[in-house]
Amino acid sequence: MGTKSRERIHGGSVRAAAERATAARKEADWLACEAWNKRMLGFQGPAQPSPALGDAINAGFGYIEVKCLGCNTHQTVALDIVRRPKTTPIHALERYMRCKDCSQVRF
Image (cartoon, rainbow, N blue to C red; front, side, top):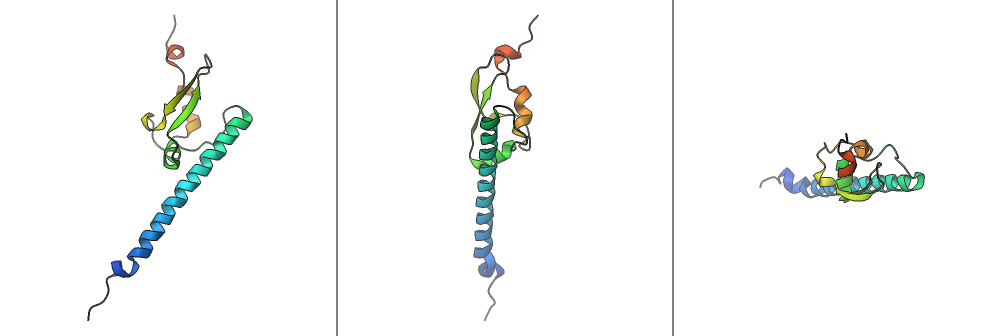
């Protein structure tokens, strides 16, 4: 007679716990992004603290709507193409978000 392997005894419960943890992280990230969206809409301006880029992507948000402070035009920016670390808070990107015409140096 042999003994059961640890994988066979505990493997299913370990995988189930990991799946529940992943789902809980995704839901927490989604709730944090929703709370930030409501603060932004309610206060009509920058709201801090904001979720990080990685948290927004994990929650399933693929885009952010940006308003240029120079000319008030609206655009959407894909979060997965932003070249910043995933730990960067979204509100820290505000100074970089402006349209092409307003970002050019004028003489």
